[in-house]
Length: 237
Image (cartoon, rainbow, N blue to C red):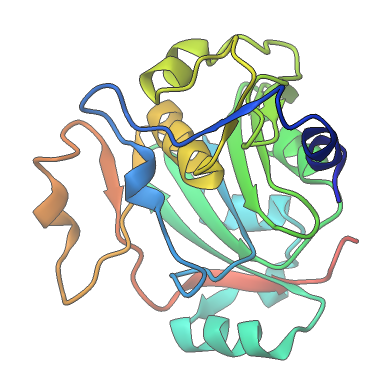
C-alpha cells in the first residue's frame, strides 16, 4: 500500500472521492476511459515530447540504434502475455510532438522526462501502474515543473507546482481542494492532451481520426497505425 493510500485508509473522513469531467468543450477524461483490456492494457506509460523526432525520443528512452525497428500490434500483444522484464516502446509523430507508448516499467520516469525536455524542450509523462504507482510529470527545459500522483492532484511538486492550475480547473479539479480523483489516469491523460494539443483516439470499426475532427477542433488527433517505429529496451529497474 502506498503512503497516500495508507493515509486515506486511516483518515477516511478527511478526503472526498470525486469523479471529474471537463468543464468546457476541451478534451476530458472520458476520451481516455480505457478498460484494462484497452489498447495498452492495465500497465503502461505514455510520454508526450515536444521538439524531438521519433528516433530521438527512442534514443532518449534508452534504445540502441540497432534495436529501432517497426513494431506491430501483434508483437505488443504477445509481449503483454510473456511478462518479460524488458520495456517495449512505440512512437508516432503528431505535429511538433512525438508520442511514445511504453509497455513495461522503469524505476525513474522523472529522470527520463527531464532528460527528454532539455535544451528548451518540453515533455509529459503519464504512468498507469497499480503496483508501482501512477504518476504525472510535466518537465520544461530539463526540470520537472509539475508532478503529482494523478489521484491526489492537491499534492503537487516541482519548480512550478501551480503552473497547470488553469488546466486542472478546466477538468473539474480544484487545485486547492483535498479531493481524491476517481478517474485519475484518464484525467491525467486529458491534462497531457490540453498541454500538448495532441489527443490519442482509440478508434474502432474502421472509424478514422477524421470522424473526431469536429469534436477536437484545433488539436492534433493521433490515431496510431500498426506497425510503428519502436524498440525493446532493457529494463531500468
